[in-house]
Image (cartoon, rainbow over all chains, first blue to last red; front, side, top):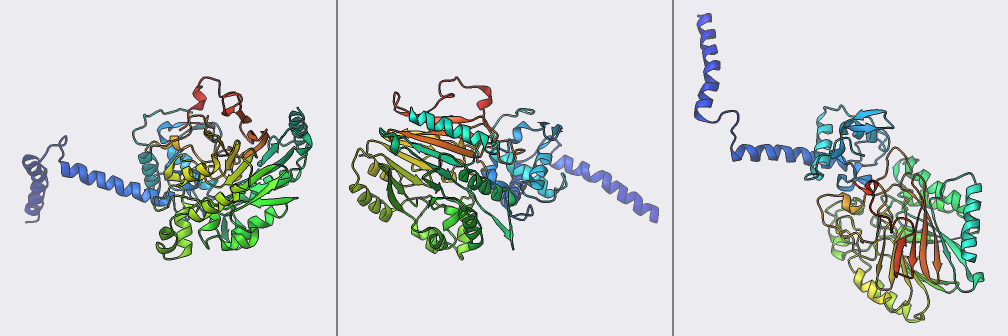
Length: 138
Length: 356
């Protein structure tokens, strides 16, 4: 009895993707609705990033990213990763954002894979959209 | 000649005092036919003193203003007076204005102040005026007519009807890139005052106008802009020699419109990117302006500094002495009729001029 249930469940699990694959799309296909949904997800994170970019509580002294970087200008995300001589190694944009949070904002660095850091990177990069990538550039 | 001598002697003096590489104020010298009439004044701007809580203020911005004041007091020859170009405070509170005024009080000599939007939009300039006096005025000094304007006013509806609290209004205007902000303007009443003020001034008298925002239109999104700039320019047009010196932009800019030369001064607090570094917007940076290189955040005082300005025969020339950058001189060139960078203007574009 128990075995039968397991077998049925297994059959269902195996059958389900096949059924979806047969009736909708393969992995390399997506609909306009999918693209819009994903774009909306992205823009929500960009919006969250803009809020953090102007949030006096991101650091500890009330200074916000936008004070020195209006519209994230001069954060030049298209140049990362790059060598920062003062840090002494090649760093990514999140590491540079954490430098800013520690220093001008006198705050506590974020986890680099935190939703907050993702949002800050998304906002800064979005404001720089259309500019060609130049990793390593000074 | 005596002007050159003055500048050299000043630089020598500055070099010998505390071995400073640069001073974060604007040193302005006006030189005329009569050398006895030559004089200088210092220019400090955009300190953005920012209150954290209790007795705590953002140290970085404090240091910028403290240093400017201390070094101004060391200047030889003594400046005749000191200009402060606006944005003493960050959010216009009494705590910030008091803290900034306390630092400015250490200046030796006469102080003239310009209103900035960060000083204004909490209580509409009431406390600032208690500390520093009228928000627009003029004075004459050794043959030059000086005018100070409050150029950061905006639409009455935005100022009076839009925000639930004065603090909210201040926060909205304080965000440079905030789409909820509103364009700066001098306004009808003040332009009428200016018209009357200039009636009594001879047309060959050099005129120097101080405003916080540029009295020209560069980029509206960050209020590098004054909405009625053309109308103010029209009032200045009949004069032979007009110089507009403004703060707000935290960077070197210069331009020439008709007979009017425009020069910006540096901030003591932090530098701003040039509008062309924002990829998503159209802007009108004067083609004459050769921008500064991108500031390096690892130097706390990078892209802040001071200028020594001659006004030979009523035209300004600013020697920018920058803390962490090569010095620059931007001066009116009578041969071409506009300000030029003495070194960079004739040099072909170099890769390190790229700004991003």
